[in-house]
Each structure stands twice: as structure tokens, then as C-alpha cells.
Image (cartoon, rainbow, N blue to C red):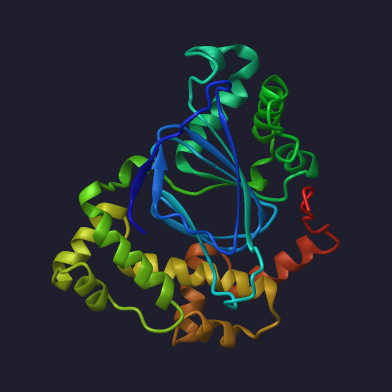
Length: 301
């Protein structure tokens, strides 16, 4: 998970980029762009890391990342060798001034400009109207003017979404300090947490991977991510717990242990810290809110 800069290379006959990613798994490392990135998650699930935050991602969601925000999509473990393409996404990339330096300063576009500013913190759009998801499938090769109109309509639609459907992924990206010299250490630390959060994770092992003593590592991690290592591990575990609470009928105790916690009382306390409610309350509210809700169906399939 090396932190890397990714240049947005626009074609000669267009001012923004449209890409389609379709592979068995997401293979991107931690990276950032100098521009904005819109992503429709057509098919896949797993964890998305943005800045210093980790949450679940699922098909049908839309993500928007602003300039300089480090992010990475990682699939959950799936059976190997099936040959099924489980990671499918449509991506639109553009710079802030791709239509001119002051284009989005116009009064009619103020909501879109506010959206672009918010994207510096990373945005997850949930329960998106199908019309917005469909727009991603309407982009066509050699239809530059049509594609531009679709992109502006898409940005306008996203800027009008209700706050309950919008999740900001980081509190303040300026507090997160990733540098090129940190890439190797961060690669080993994040990978260690991702692969072991459901069993045993400790700061001593993480420190050894970063070639540091435990005390120095704890200070280093807090300085770079604005959170302690244990907070990051618990956040990763709680994000997985929310997925199990929604997607399975496992009991609370079973989910607690499956996510790497060894004490139900501690699990309940941590869950309430991150989600503002108990696991039981969380499941009950999500089941009720999702009752009768249509599932996402990729328009392009």
C-alpha cells in the first residue's frame, strides 16, 4: 500500500478523463491525485481507506475524492480462482479548473463548487437515486460535448443530495501528514491491520514492521494519522462489525469475536463510540430503514 501520486492525464480532445475498471480485485495502492475523482462502485465490496479513515464500501455507492486526499479500495477476502470479475468501477477524473479558472465561481454553480470543496475530505454517497448512477453508463467514446453535459448534470445532482445520504470521510485532511518517506512504513502497517484485524493485532508487531521501537512507533502513527494505533484498529474492526450486523443474522457475541474483539462489553462500548448507538440498536434501525428498499442493479450489465 505505497502512498503514491497519480497524475490525471487527459486526452488531447477532452478536458477530463473517463475510465472503467473491471478486474477480479482492486489492485490500487494508497494514492492521491492533483484533481478530483468521482467513482461509481458498480460491483464489489470491502474496505475503503481515505485519509486516516476506514469504512465499508458496497456496490451502488458513489465516492468523490478531492486533490491530495490519500485513498485506497481493498476487497474483502473472496474465494480465489473463481475467475469472476468482482471489482467493477467507473471513474471520472478532472482538475478543479478543467473548464477555466473561474468557471465554478458563477452563481448558478455555487452548489457544485461547495461539493468540490467538501470532496477534499472525501465523500461517500449512499442511497443514491438510480438516475445519478445511470449517468455513469451514459458516457460514450468520442462524444465529448455530450459527456461534458452529463458530468455537469451528475455533479449538480450530487450537490443536491440530502445530508443523511452523504458521509464525509475525514474531519480535516490538513491534519493528516503522509509523505513519500512514510510510504514503506505505512504500507506494512495498514496491510498488517487489514489482514489481521479479525484475530490479533498489537502495536509491538506493527512497530517491528515499521522498524521502530513501540513507543516511537505509537508517537509516529499518531503524528501521521491524528489518531492512535489502537483507535485505528478498533475503527477497522467496528467497520467490519457494521457489515456483519447488516449482512448476516449472526448474534452480537459471534460478531464481536469475528471482528477480533475478545470482550463483549468492550466491543459494545467501542461500537457506541464510533456509531453512536449499540450494535443491537444499529442493526434494528438499519433493518427497518432498508425494508423494502430496492437493491442496486448495474445498468451496464
